Amino acid sequence: MEKMRRALITGITGQDGSYLAEHLLGLGYEVHGLVRRIALEDPERRFGRLLKLRDRVHVHAASLESYASVFHIFSRHEFDECYHLAAQSFVAESFGDGFSTMNININGTHYVLAALHELQPKCRFYFAGSSEMFGKVREVPQKETTPFHPRSPYGISKVAGFDLNRNYREAYGMYCAGGILFNHESPRRGHEFVTRKITSTVAKIKSGLAGELRLGNLEARRDWGHAADYVRAMHLMLQQEEPDDYVVATGETHTVREFCERAFAVAGLDYRDYVKEDARFYRPAEVDLLVGDASKARRVLNWEPTYSFAGLVEEMVREDLRGLAGAAPHA
Ligand code: GDD
Image (cartoon, rainbow, N blue to C red):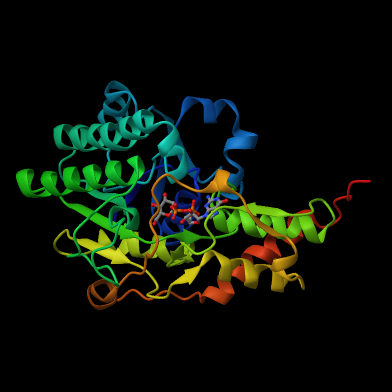
């Protein structure tokens, strides 16, 4: 009988971590997660996205700010695959505290790679790179060979992590794959990101719990896919003969304004009646146009997204409306 494969997911409590855990469990993996100690002490709040899986995943406490704690996990448990998703992932926040973003995203990645190199060099490793690495884009659409020009401390930290990952592959022959994932959303998206901010506020407005939605740059363009589609690509990247880097994207781009238009329409509302531009939500440097060319992932990994933009927006709004059904409006 084939041995059960064992995977470790850092960031398992996040949007992508929870979808990936579900996907791997469905494929028959034994799934482990690395979480901060504080999460173990506050499971109700921190494991919200994992509630249904809580008894099926093995969680270990460790901090990405401590090499010793990461080393400790790898010295006690062996893994076939490691998906490194944990990061400070909110771009706007990285302008506020670039130092901790750099520390977690660069050193945290380095700690996991160094511990694997030392203890489990055969373990396959996935690094979560980002389209933010393209920043001030040099070509449209962006692909694996497009030069990076990051525009935020977050983007810079991801470029450094991506380079580290490639260097472990080239210097030590480790199986290190890098995903360059464009924005991916879902009903499990954090409320700080623009899509969920929009869909959750639409639901509140519809339920009489809010009267307006204040946003920053409405003309920014993003290539938005669904997280459930994107975690399948992560897994496929670790099943190839040779490790490599791949862009994962839908190839379609939409403005924040278009997202609003559709999201309000799902609830039968006109966004122009509620959306207000607010300078507080502008960023010091913006990434104006992201759209990816995922032809390599389609060709080599045989990966295809299944959600359309309209389907994604609709699912998010409907889930937020469902979540608020029955909530009392304020007096
Ligand atoms: N968050 C937010 N809030 N964004 C706003 C707002 C607002 O009120 N108003 C306009 N935007 C614009 C931002 O300026 C940006 O251009 C766009 O909406 C998307 O912002 P986010 O949803 O915060 O995501 P992001 O594109 O900066 O980063 C996400 O995608 C990356 C992949 O490209 C994150 O998930 C990153 O971790 C990820 O790497």
